Length: 192
Ligand SMILES: Cc1cc2nc3c(=O)[nH]c(=O)nc-3n(C[C@H](O)[C@H](O)[C@H](O)COP(=O)(O)O)c2cc1C
Image (tube, rainbow, N blue to C red; front, side, top):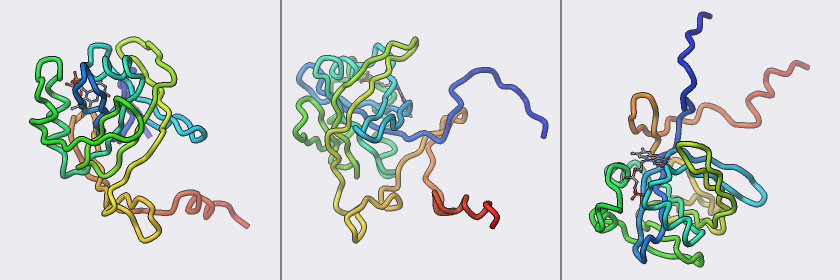
């Protein structure tokens, strides 16, 4: 197979399109973020990479708490809106997006009721990497809308209908169908 080198770039996908929340100057602010991933199972941790000038990051650094909200495809426009406009210039960003805000036990981490899954996090480590500050957050609580839970009370990804972001086409996509069972289908290759 012939390969072409494309140069070093952030070519890792698909990525989630998330909404990161923090109280900034006493007001809830949200921004779209895709540079994010799970970092540790025990204790449960994730990372979010912020450009240093993000208004949301100001609140994250001050309160040392933040939220990660998983939007459905139904919240695509609102998610994109928070990724185009900064709370530093748009004081009514949360109201314009129409987000219904609620709080859990973690002070300073506003969450969005319309997003089916919400993670409350506290800041564990901040790494200044270059263009981005990587925040490692510990997940302190998970909130899930009842209508995305299956009969066993577990989150059903199909019901969440998460928003996916792809590069370099800068597009939003929807999750596809199940193609196999993880930790199982690969065992079929082992003979005998
Ligand atoms: C799909 C999408 C993903 C984004 N991912 C990130 C990201 O991971 N990190 C980041 O710093 N900015 C990211 N942005 C840009 C911010 O959301 C944008 O600059 C936003 O206006 C910042 O808002 P704030 O200044 O109110 O915090 C993304 C934008 C979009 C549309």
